Image 1: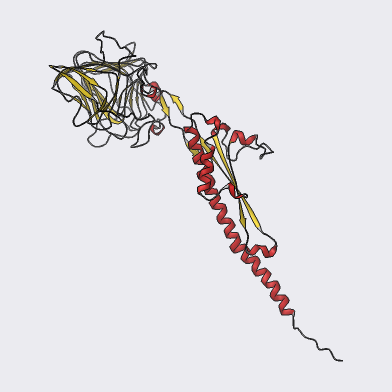
Image 2: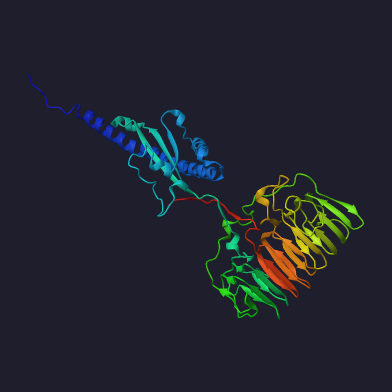
Length: 464
C-alpha cells in the first residue's frame, strides 16, 4: 500500500487560528472602544452627580441627614447608571465619610485633595459600571468593570462683613466707562466724616480716585484704601486731624463675584411684595402701607407733604423721586426714636432710579426686628437695588436728614451730596461707582451691629 504525502487540513487549522486572532483584534477594536466609551460616559456621569450632590448639600439646612446624597444618585440615574440593575453601583460620600468607609479599607484620602483641605467639604461620587463583551468572549473575557470617581469641593456659606467692614465702598474692579463718574469721585466743597471705619475703592485703575473739588475734605478713622493708583490729592485726614493721603495699592482686589455674579442678585433672598402698596390721606398728610408700587416713581402724590411709612417691605418698581419739600419718616409715633417692633422699612427697587433732593427732610430706619413676620435676612437693609438694576442713586440732604441701614446697590452709580445742614448716615454704602460732593457736611457712622452681614455664596468647584 502506498501513502501519499498531502497538505490537506492544515489550512483549516491556520484559518481557525487566524479567526481567533481576528476576533481578538475585533475585541480590542470594538469591545475596547465600547469599554472606553462607557468609562468616559461614566466619568461624565460621576462629575455631574458630584456637582448635583454638592449643590444640594450647600443648600440643605440640615446636611447631616444626608438627603443631599439622593440628588447625586438621581443625577447618575438620568445618565444611565442605575444601581437597581443589580450590577451598577453608585456611591456618594463626603471625603470624611470615605476615609472611614468599609469600601476604603486602607483609609486613603480622596484623590486630588489640596493641602489643608477640610475633608467634610468635599463630595465624592463613585460609579461602578459593567460592560458586557461581544467578541472578547472568544478569548474568555465576558465582561469588563469600570470604576470612575469624581471629587467636588462644596464650600459652605460664609457669614462675614461686606468688604471687610468699610463704610463707603466703590466696588468697581475696573475703570469708569465713557460718560460715567468714578470709580471714586471726590468733588465740591463738602466736608465728609467717616466714623469707626474707612473708604474702600476696589478699582485697579491708575488713578482710581478723581479729585474735582476745591476745599473739600474727608476725615476717616480707618483711612482710604485704594487698590489702584492715587493722584496727588489733598483734603484727606485721620480722626486726629492729621493729613493722611489715601493708601494706594493697599491690598488685593476683592473678588465681587463672592457677593454677586454679573447681572445677577447678591446673595440676599430677593424680597417679594404679594400685595399692592397704598398711600392714603390728604391735605399734605399721608400714610403709606407696604407692598408693591408702580406706574411712576414713589411717592405718587403732590410735591410736598408729610408721609409716614408703616413697617414693611416696599417694592418700588419705578424707583423713587423726591422733587419737593417732603417730610418722609418711619417714626410713626412721633417720639423722635426708632421703635424696632413697630417701625422700619425695606426699600426694594428692581427698576428705576433713586433721587432724594435737598429740599426733603428724611428720617428713615431699616427694619431691625422681625416682629410682624418679616424675614430676618432682610433686616438692617434700608435700600436694596439688585445688580440687575444699574440705577443712578442720588442721596442729598440739607435739612439734617437721617438714614439708618445698609444701602446696597452693587451695579449702581451712587452720589452722596451734602448741602447745608449735616446729612447723617448710620450705614454702610456699597455701589459700583461712587461720588461724594456738595457744599455741606456728610456724616457717615459705621456700626457693625447695625448693618447686615454679607452671605458669601457657597462655591462649587472640582479638585485638580
